[in-house]
Image 1 (cartoon, rainbow, N blue to C red):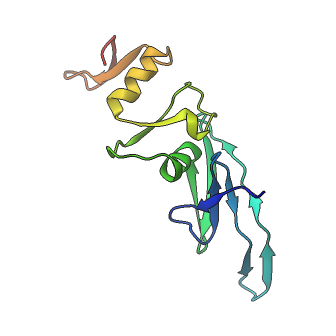
Image 2: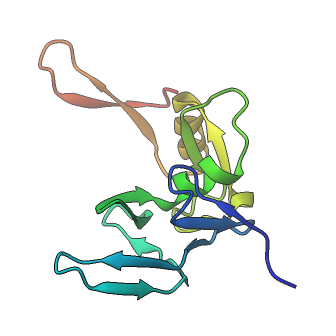
Length: 141
């Protein structure tokens, strides 16, 4: 029995995603600048670790390569967002756990509250009106 996959939004002819949030490239033929044809077979795409701790993925289309946060790709393709919330939260606080069951759409306030409640952040930063420097505001959400 083969797994169910669907086209990746914005990259429909190049990549697919399955229910577990794994991204796969599709078979494709690429012609280089010398006119030589190369067949690139389909494969599971690797999650790369970014210096921020998040997983990223590199997606290519029409000669352009874009580095995208993996959790955002999973959420945009597999998690409904009926209230059009702009941020994706990792429910367990683990930036590398990009399974769809661990992701949810949130507002900035909900995201910050989750970070504080889970101990990932103990304050919110705000700008000092006099100096313009950022200062911590303990317990503000």
